[in-house]
Structure formats: structure tokens, C-alpha cells
Length: 540
Image 1 (cartoon, rainbow, N blue to C red):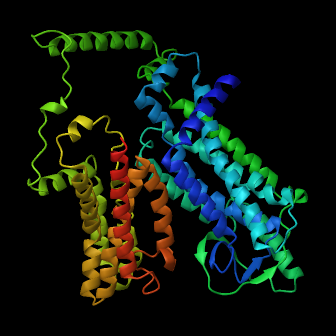
Image 2 (image 1 turned 120 degrees about the horizontal axis):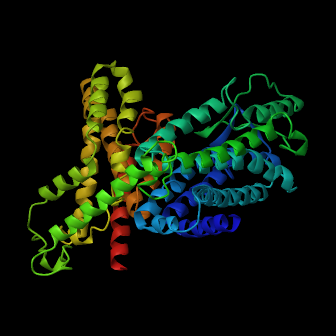
Image 3 (image 1 turned 135 degrees about the horizontal axis):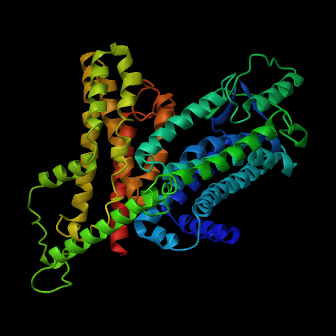
């Protein structure tokens, strides 16, 4: 069993590390390492200590970088590790594995190990970044390997093990395989991160242990430490912090719940990974019936009769579909018989078709859109810009994540042969995403204009154009929806918290990058999307 699990995990990891989404999240992880312990005059912070900053010792750099990695990879890492079980089911690999002696627990545990390898490789890169940051900063050249790596091993790695297990669990739970699961995980992630920093809640990140140790170091340096507050999250502060010397967590700090918390997370991850066995059918549609055969009298006979009826039905359907001219005739589309439309044909049908593709299967989505419109029309004018407007640009995240890719659509090359030129299709797809953005933001923008805040209305209108352009680029680069589903919630969360540098919607009221800069960013993202697609098609 161990050899089978190892082989499956390594093969899966090698395949996934070649995906563009892996590279994007890895680069984001490395960038986070530089932001967690900023070098130079950067004002960004991932770990906030009100008015203070620790000297860049091995312990301090390792701790703040590990905490930042835990927050980032718990969301972005989940989105790039989930989806492997459905993919095996779609491409036929699962059916091949189902014909082998591999058991369901072995397969799921192999997927869990593969997910952990993906996240662990990024965590290793983050630890190397922390080591480099300490040396580049130059405030302490003494490298304490234990204090540098201990937060990664005891805080971040156990949490990532739980994330890896939850990705397997979501892949097997009905209804959570797609974008709905991504949104639910975003809520779980947000609640978990906020609760870990609140007193009395479960200390997921061991913040209480770290903050108490830092308070003692601040007090030992002669500074008042009672009112100091700690937090994890990307923020920017122009004030020059007061530095203090904190050596970090050592082997003597393994008590106080730190080691017990790590053990609890690891145990929870194993339980979550194996709990997925209850819903995993081993790629066999009849497994759900067979699983209860020993418990329900006559269930096995019913399953056999059902299988025989399906086989007989398939046999008759096959012969009914055979043409009179001879057996074996293919009914696939012949691209040579499809005539592309003339260049002068109307662009409107293509745009309407792209809008229909984006909204396909989203009947209930309009109810949420209507509810947000009613909310935007009824709240006081002071609440329209924040929080109502940001909520409207979060609601269509699953629709926008479809842009630039055809995930789950199967092979559609024959169909695309009858469509307009690729550039026109992408442009129509981009405009379809913009149409969705205008639909959800229309009422808040009208309210802003009616209240006389034309500048905010223009900023909101331009900001709403950035999201479809980002979605198109993510979809084309990764050829799937998960990269956008991982990156956009983080961008939205930073904007919602009024971080000026990423305030693409203008909710910080004049502190953001400006309307012209946001418009330029939207154009740049759209141009990059079109350019990447053109290069990819040229190299086919």
C-alpha cells in the first residue's frame, strides 16, 4: 500500500507542478515572503504589531513569514490543489485506476499526499526566501536554523496538511466540487483567520503564544506593551515603527499548546482525508448501490437488474442510431463542412452567445443580483460606496471565472471552427464579462450619481472593468477557473479593507491609485490576455 500511495502522490505532484497555476501561486508565495519582512523602504506589512517591528533575526523573520504563508496558502493553495479527483474522472484515469487493486483509502490518501507535496514545495520556497531576507536586511547575520524553521514546521505545515485534506474532501462531496466549493472555502478561510486573531476563539495560528512572547520582549526593551495589538493580514503603514529584539520561538517554547495545536491539526487532516471515503464512489456509478448491498435485502439483485436494464437499453439505442448506409459511421462534426462566417458579419450574435455561455446554468444567480440591487436602492447613500458596492463585484466571481477557458466543456475544437476569428471571440468574451459587471454595479453607480458623487461613480465604473480583464487573463494563462477563484477573493478582501494600493473600486475615497491608473490596468490586463492567447495559438 505504501508503495502505491507514494507512486500516485509523486506522479500527481510532478504533473501539477508543470501547470501555469502552480507557477503563479508560487511566484505569489515568494512575493509574500518579501512583503512579510519588507526590505528597504517598503511600507507593506503582513504581520502587524501596533507601532512596533522586531529586528530581523532568524526567529522574527521566520515567524512573520510563516504566518503570512499560512494565510496566503490556506486560500490560494486550496484552490490549486482541489479538482484532481474530478479531473481523473473526466480524463479516464480514474476508470483505469478503478480496474486496479488500489483501494479507495489508498487513492484518497495518495491525493492528500500529493496536495501536501504541492503546498509543501511552496512552503519550502517561502522558508528559503525568509533566510535570504534576513541576510539581505543585515540587522542580524546570525542564522539560527531551528528558530527560523520552527514556525514553518509547527504552525504553517500542520495547517496546510488540513488544507490539503479539505481539498480532497471537497472533491468528493456532492455540490462542492466546482466554484460553489471555492466560495464556501473562502468564507471558511475568512472566518478561520479572523477567529484565530480574536480572544477566546480557537487559536489556529498560535497567535496567543507568539503575541505573549513578543509582549515580554517589548516590555524588556523598556516600552509599554499592554496596549500592543497583533494581527495578520496585508496592510500598509507609513509610520516608522519602533524596533525591539525578539529571538523567536525555540525548542523551549514547544509547550503552551504549540505542539498540541500542531498535533491536533495533523490528526484533523488525516480524519478529513479518510472521511472522504464515505462519498467517494471509486469512479463506479454503481458503487453507491453496491455499498449498501450488504445492508439492504435484495439490493444486490436490484443492482444487477438495473445494470442489465442499462446495458440492454444501451444496446438498443446503439442499433437505433446506426444509419442505414452502414455500421460504424461517425456522427462527429467535420470541420471541413463548417463554413466560418464572413468577416463583415454582425458582432452582436457573437457577443450574445458569449453572454449566454457565461450565464449558462446560473438561473438562481439572478436572485442574488436582484437582492443586491434592492439592497443598493434601499440603504442610506453613505453605505452605497462601502460596503454595498464591493459586495456587488464579489457576487459574480463564479461567472467571471469561466472567462478565457472552457473548463468542463470537453473537446469543442469542431464547434469553434464555425465561430468567428479567435481574436473576435476573445473580445466578445471580454465584453460579455464587462456586461455582467455593468449589470451588478448599475444600481450602486446610479445611486452615487444621484447623490452628486460623480467622481466615485466614475471610479466604480472603471474599477468594475478591471475584474473581467483579470478573469480573462487568469483563464487564458491557467486554462481553468481556479486561478481566478484563488486570486480575486484575496484582491477583493484587500480592497474591501480599504488598502489604498489595491483599491481598484475607489472605496478608500481618494486614497487609491486613481481612475486613470485603474483604467490603464484594465487595458493592460486585457492586452496581456489577448497577447498570451495569440502567442499560444501561434505555437500550436
